[in-house]
Image (cartoon, rainbow, N blue to C red; front, side):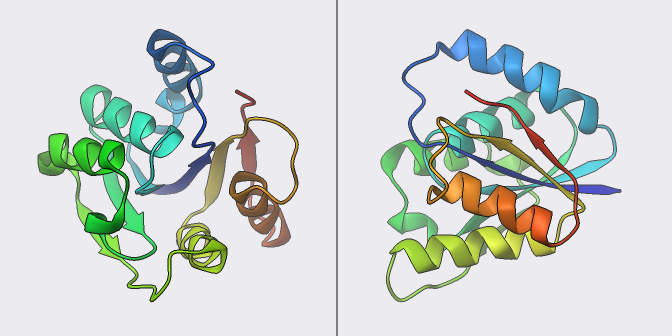
Length: 149
């Protein structure tokens, strides 16, 4: 079974939901057969990809949060609740503070358990969590698929 980490921007309002559905069909769909996806429990790409995978594939899904699900934004909590029957596992890493180091630790946790990462960055900011995750993947010698949004 292929294990895939998904990372991406929280800022998704610049594209329509139909555009994201097409992107996910094109770039997640080919990897979904006999796959296990690790998705961060945040808003934006995390929630959108969770909803798409749960509704369009039979892939296993693990949602990973840096703290707890209750600490996530409303959009993310709603996506998790709507797809709960399709989620194989929810991992709450229990970080004492939800600051940048906690999110980076969550991203490393997902990459360390995956054989590849699919990233949906918005822009080229190397300090963004998406690029940090993609670069961590590369540093580990693992493949990464980058789909700019």
